[in-house]
Length: 469
Image 1 (spheres, rainbow, N blue to C red):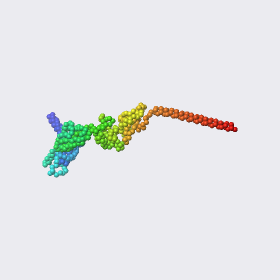
Image 2 (tube, rainbow, N blue to C red; image 1 turned 60 degrees about the vertical axis):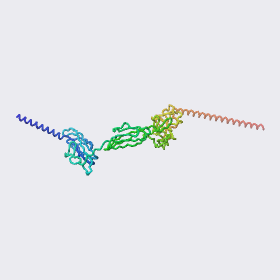
Image 3 (tube, rainbow, N blue to C red; image 1 turned 120 degrees about the vertical axis):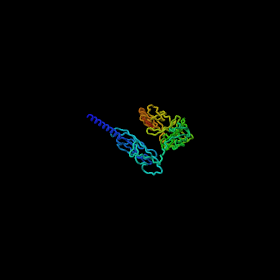
Image 4 (cartoon, rainbow, N blue to C red; image 1 turned 135 degrees about the vertical axis):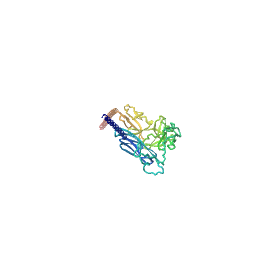
């Protein structure tokens, strides 16, 4: 009996081990997986191929890269993508991601890849839709459908890949020298030239005879920085750009004098802001033709000059000479121009001539001698019609108005003035009254004198007549 029990226990253990082994085997067979396949391994240029990504016994996101770029959720399913072979070469697709296993619920990493060759169609092969190879489709890592692997047509030699070399083998300039020294991997160079340089020629050669070079030859130069691009296009179409920055010395070539200072004509005017209503023209300055700007609205012509301190400004050009600085400025909604104040206009009674600062801008103008008017200042500017204007600025109210040439006054001064005027008026009225009274009395006295004389003469005449009788 005991022997039979041992046999039965041994049989049960054996069966249990077999079941466990089978379960493990089945689990391995049906574990979650992903694969990528292609409808053909080789196609002709102009044809298309279909890539199919599949997930078995699981679900998750699969990322595709290469000839196909996508991220797709697959739940024990597949997704297909059709790609055209536009040029000879290779179409490759790689997959990756995490897929959750149906049986264990554990995320498992998946990966794979596949490539399809794209070849030129031979001249003796008729064109037509469809892939050049049919039958089973090739997959990355596994094969779905049939197990056959398509091959390229036996009568079409595989085309040699096109060159990707887009490097230069040399770079040189006709004047000056490039810095740093040429290196195929260095794409930016600098050339420094004197102020009188007007052109430069660039010579460059490609490292690959199948590559093309553009941007060589002669180039015009202006004062300042000139950037020249040299494009190298490889046989496969990839472009690499080399840059040559030619710095032409901006030192002026034409000079003049104004107010005992030396001014040079600025040659690089690309970045300056031209004032409103001005259009480009030319003028002759010290025997040289230079760039200038004219405004018909203002009837003014200006040039752009730099002084010995490096300060650049516009200047008025009148009667073939520089007559004043001309500096555009915006002030409290007005477009004004700072100009020089003539010497005969700098002295004004009760005012001190000098620099006036308003809104961080420096003006030619005046402040008041009377400290009671320290918040007031006067400026001398030109308006948009070319007229000279005096403006009075009051700091506490931040107010700007035309100056009437009458000084401002305090209320205390006004009161004193009114009191003085009233006193003067009283005196005048008293004098008038005194004059009138005095005049009346004098007239009355004169009248009495006249009457007295008349009466005296009449009496004498009367007495004379009586004596005759």
